[in-house]
Length: 529
Image (tube, rainbow, N blue to C red; front, side, top):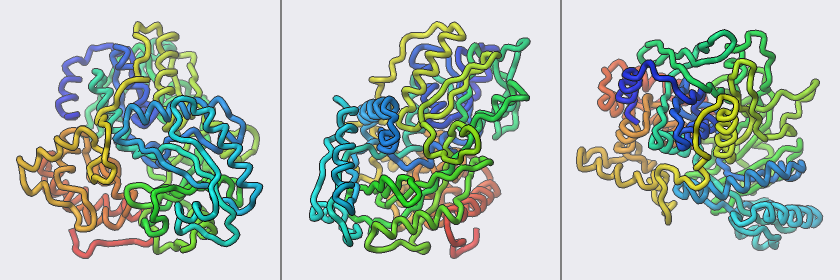
């Protein structure tokens, strides 16, 4: 994933006509790229920012069928998602963990209701089940969740789902797609479509690092830009009516002391009918999510005050120690690309998360909806459609059994480098090149300087944010610590990318400004940069 070398190769083939050009480098676009390339189709993916910069790095960190969708009666979506959950655990065992969820019950009816309902979840999992659900006593509920609010507690129900690291998976999918001969680039913004008459025949793009403009010809152009799909469709048809209504999901990150065990909590129905999760993740606890309809969208959505208060208030009802604003290590918001609700309804939580593929009269193919768990199936379905409508000559999809880059069995999830899988040895080999790189970046966290070097050389990290937000997850786990790491990371990246001192200074300062948006109170490092 050496970006400069890959761009040089790209320029040597400037007259090439690609089979498939994909706009968007989140979960959906990367899934399409992997499926397309693995079929032998020449594939180019362009992402305007960093891979998974938007929604795809801001999930609840679950690979799941969706208990909520089961309650809504969306059996087909749940069955599909549970199957994909099982496949992903097999294909990326270094990133997907089997997580036990506890639903605390405060009425005996609820215990019976959820015990019976989750048996259907087990049945739909089929051979790819992660474990059977069951009702548990009050005593066992407390032993699994020692900090649960015990007042009125009758017992609980346990079930199994997957927990994962979203942006790490995105990077590994990008690497796997490249290994299948795809060309995949971050910081390449598509700013126009090429047309022959009314037919889309390619894209116009600009490399945001160099400012250089490019045109790429393609037989099939696929719009996989999530909440931005309408912008691409407007390039095709200026009078296009918006099809997406973003729904914002907010998460708060707390220290492990609020839930010291290994199990997660799932609250199936909060006061306003939403689902709330509290999930152990990288030695912290992620609590969320909200479901707030928005009219605007951006790459850096901001949590609303009422969303923060909703999560804190709801968590207080179920945890013996009530989290306060001062306990929040980081707050992050993501936007779901949901279909615009009909009429005046704001009930985005009731909109199906099934994906939808639309083919415009020009031949532009747009994929909308879906969720992280079903990224592979979304990619397969989209390429199937492209092969059919654009008459491409590709093989059958091969991604069901395809191991994701970094694949490694028997992973020790206590190892701070576990999420690199088979790449761990490569990182450790950098210690020989420079012994200083074996040292941690921050005294309270195990992240090593070598990981910065690895991210630049092998994971296309271009900025301090790329590293601290998505190659490792410090910004999402502890924004104050991320701010304290910024200068060291900037200096390491400066040397590796052969930048000057002003670049490092600007990078550190801009990251600190960004990171403060993940905090409820502004924080400045003790020394100036």
